[in-house]
Length: 249
Image 1 (cartoon, one colour):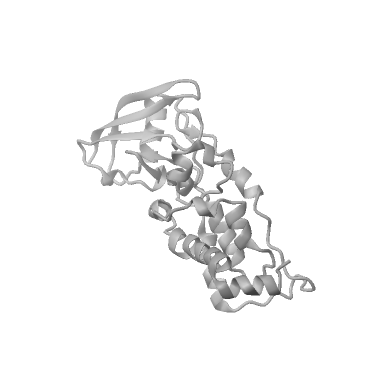
Image 2 (cartoon, rainbow, N blue to C red):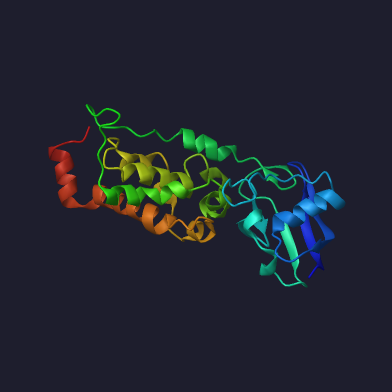
């Protein structure tokens, strides 16, 4: 059954903006993105929103709904009561371009900073061999759709703009962990995670895991294991002695 819902949408650009109120029809089974499209069609055709697949697989329609980072296409209107005002704002951790569209180029810059897979010398394409357990371990991380909700909710990025230069964020620390856990990768990802990508700034609050639409256990399966490897490298006396005697290249 249709009803009239109250929406509050952030409108503006990088210079100025404010929350504007709208009353819009909601039908059974709809998601927030449906309502945004109805607003564009009936009341505010210049409302800017980024979207593509509307199936929760492209990560384009990331925004904040009632203060929580979500995919607009995966947030059902049945989540809210008919009397509730639904507030939709852009991702807070990134600069606004216009309305609900933000500049997420920070994330692509961080992606370029991570060296790609480095096979060991003498092993060519077609010669890689892995145990199934190693395949399954990294397969979880490959489900990431790069919606950047984890990057947005991470308070290291969200609340401290000056951290962005030295902190890759959970999405790309997860990428480092994926490569480090690959049995054929030959780079020293442990040192890079700590010294170059800011792993030490993460205090494992699990906020990134909580907002992941693919339900990836980012904290438990990627960040904590990487922190354990850093601790082993730095503080385990046997590992320390081994590094001194057989210094890693």
